[in-house]
Image 1 (cartoon, helix red, strand yellow):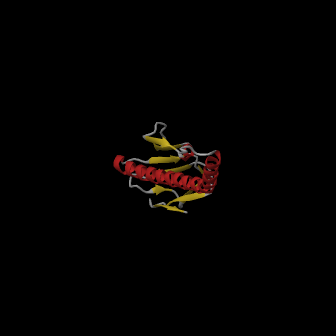
Image 2 (image 1 turned 90 degrees about the horizontal axis):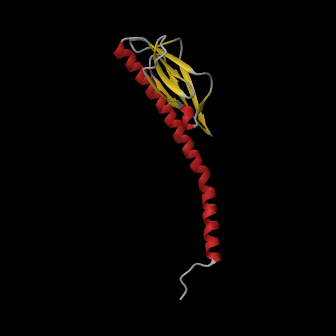
Image 3 (image 1 turned 180 degrees about the vertical axis):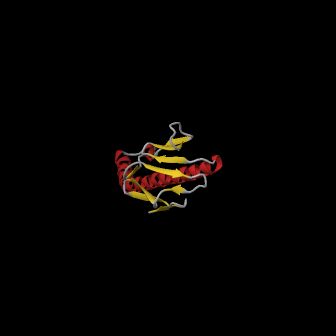
Length: 141
């Protein structure tokens, strides 16, 4: 009685596995891009909320700096960050345009003239974080 696989059976299993992997891999890459972009957007939203709450609790003007490689909360005019975290670039996510600065008053309002948006991109996945002057933050596709 035979207990081994033949070379033809092994080659057939490898060929079917290769075809299935070729079909599934692009979908998996797109899913990973979407997850990383949504994670970067969530980190920016959390940093915005953290800066706003810190400005209110400390009763001072604070700045949130969103850079490709770093998210920082600094006192106005200060150089030593109160808080920092890796930026979107560390997970392969880029954003269009220059680094963004948001200044928070001790009342928690963003100082400035209009809304700001931070477009985040990785692969074909894209999200935009829209920040209003009144402190509202939303993520749009």
